Image 1 (cartoon, rainbow, N blue to C red):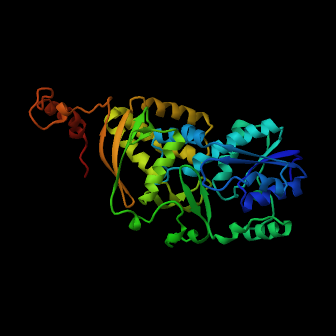
Image 2 (spheres, one colour):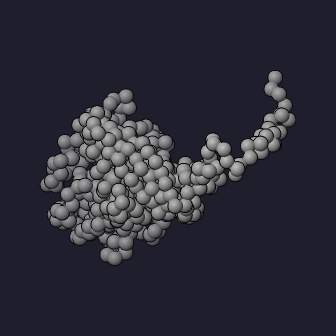
Image 3 (cartoon, rainbow, N blue to C red):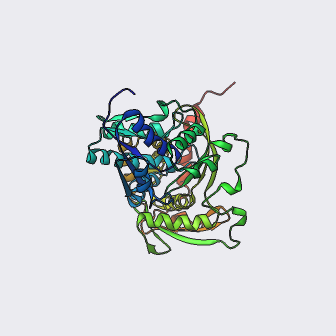
Length: 399
């Protein structure tokens, strides 16, 4: 313990780790603890979480429904940028941490707290994501990182402490891996998944149907975009969170969005992560389809060159950084003409684009046609090719 604190706001889930942390903070720092829980669509029962926090020793507990804000201000901006980490990860957990941290800081200011804490371990990315956000939004508050301070060696010791303290967390002991869900995805890591050669247990997946068991008839749907954001499914306009719920339902029923990857953590190690992102997988395919007929070629090339950097910033916890604001402004500018509809087929784990249309389309059938037309003189290609070949002719031949 390096600094005396009076009141701490804890990012609280009600599970083993944060329940132990809550009681440990009281025992170690002799302080008040305000438990903060963000409802970001994790599909867990939150009705009794406030009572559980108070029973564990919290002086107050705050539960906020942030699903609409999460979809509108975090998921949709990332999808406008086609964010994708290391070719596979749609950044579900990475996008959730900044909104939790933001509101955690707001609760701290409202309750007069002088410290913030989280349940992230000392080996993962989440500790970085939470704490970078804390530093950006509330640099004057003390940060407590229990997993880097206490003497507990692992979750078996946490369970022992919980039992000694009379904490009720029986459900945690039954799983040999950790899960984390929100409106965009659910993730699985640790335990049996630490062997990258081992196939995930089919019973592990909580959201999506096994693609082999998915319906034998495909589902066809249409998604409409305005300024790069999805606004309607099959002609029905929905709120951001409502739209995410709808495409999640369609994707999950058809076994869409399962990803098993070994990724490079920001802290330096490789880690295996298994994800289910059914709706996000559908939205990315639909968004790219509409972009293909509405985005200028050179704008798309520049945007695409920056997607890896943009995605890395999200993954590494720099959501509230100046470079992120700069890139987001550029990404949003590139989306101003992305209006239109994409029609897709979803079938046994796959997503296929059937067609795309837009009132702002840059595609011209009259120019693209192989049939006779008087807009494009094919003879112009001769000079075009010769000019582009000049530097190749002048190149010194390799020996």
